[in-house]
Amino acid sequence: MPIDLPQAHHNFYGKHHYLELESFFPEEKIEAWRKSLGNYASFDDAYLSGRDLWRKNPSIKKLITNRNLVQCASKLAETPSLQLGFDQALCTFENTSKLPLAKQPVSLSQISNASSIACGAIINLSTENSPYPLEPTPAPTEELILPIIPLPHTPGSVLFISPELPLDFQKLVETPSQTLLLIVYTHVKPLYIQNALDPHANALKKLGYGFGDHLTTKTHLLLIK
Image 1 (tube, rainbow, N blue to C red):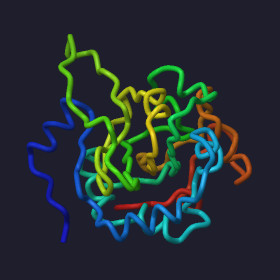
Image 2: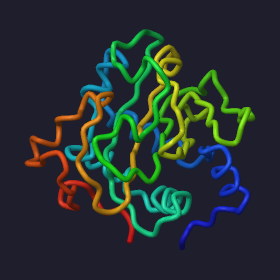
Image 3: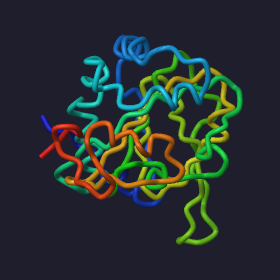
């Protein structure tokens, strides 16, 4: 049965560019997915080693293709079809990062190697609540979108984010003991692009792509149609 999002959820997402849905996944699934994510020594280690885990990990692939998750993303992005851009492990250890993306607020569109970003989803796979509950802050003007810490508050929660929302990765990096999975969704037939802030900018060349090529469904899953 298709999942139904109340109009209030759509309105909140449209105004604030994010929406957190608590208790989206049960505890037993979260524990299994957390173990599947792997072990990392730092935020940078996770970011550099934890990209596109679905390609080799059936458990992570099952999470990414979860019907309710994909349907929510599709409804919030207001598109009937989504393609997988990439998945990315985000693990925090209350330390620092040398990655450029952690030096200033950045959006999904600025850190992705695929064009046409539809939205993103960050799943909390941690064992405890985050210390930073999300609270919408009124922007001084309607044109200004204030950055948020991309961190769902409770284990099992999912934070959906728009492509334009600035994400405070620096504050995320400094957070203790959080395990997250970022999923980036695109519209159908995105292009392979180069972003200076993406440490995986050249990764898809190993799959035979060149910048400007369309990313096919053989390498980037078609999730809903």
